[in-house]
Length: 244
View 1: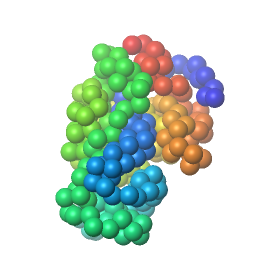
View 2: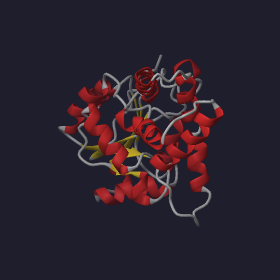
View 3: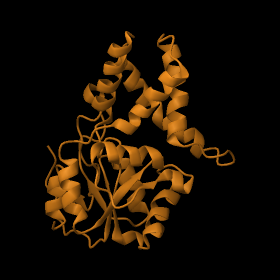
């Protein structure tokens, strides 16, 4: 249970959202997508295990980019594809063509929002500038928004700054592109570490728990780990708290 947080809401002009896990249910979406594709193709595999391993490869792949700034920046689609090629080999999923691997990688573009995401975002959009601030690349986030009906005003991606969160360049770069000081840009996330990075740079913070993000594997972010500026149960309550 999330403890209700009733502190005064900061005066902000824009809300930026983490996406994977916060706005969209990546795990259930990908499992359903891959299982349906596998059935249609007659390919038998443990798609749940593949999805969980794929997500576990997410942070190490980005950290490899973050710790080697001398190398060209690799966008998330590229990292997802590299991880997928390794994982299908490790899990013995044989006979996949380049087109197959591309289709599976594009599954990250076809994720579905949580039930409260679109209603809450639609209300917030009436009063604030809203957009993602995600490690997903621009095409991924744009296609996802089109697929899921996410009503963004704009798409802000780590790709624009050639850095991945939690690098300061992402948060401060987003505020700069919006023409706003950091204290007028609220970061909304289901991940305490994301909010900690944002707060350290002066951004107000809002925590929205997604306790089923990782399914039975979830052990982190079940509760707020700090006294974030706003703590709510979902995006509809966030719209209430933000006066929408």
